[in-house]
Amino acid sequence: MELVWDEDAACYSRNAVSNHVSNLRKKLKITPDGLEYIKNVVSVVYKFEVP
Image (cartoon, rainbow, N blue to C red; front, side, top):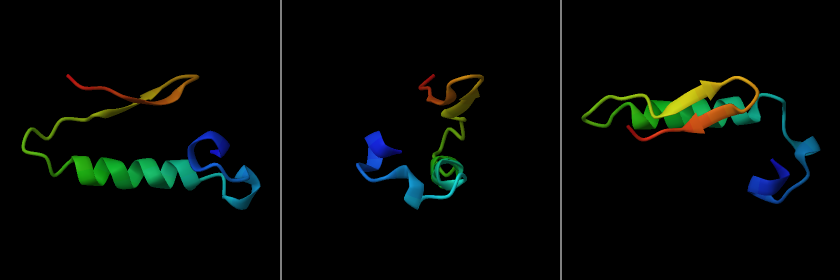
């Protein structure tokens, strides 16, 4: 989080990234193709993938 927002990560809850990803998924689902662009990857956490 420090790399993305350039702020101390201690200010955010542990779920901050999950909440942001959830919001992004909701917004991306309204695309006409309805594909899943954000994938969960073990040991990486999230990955943006364009088919």
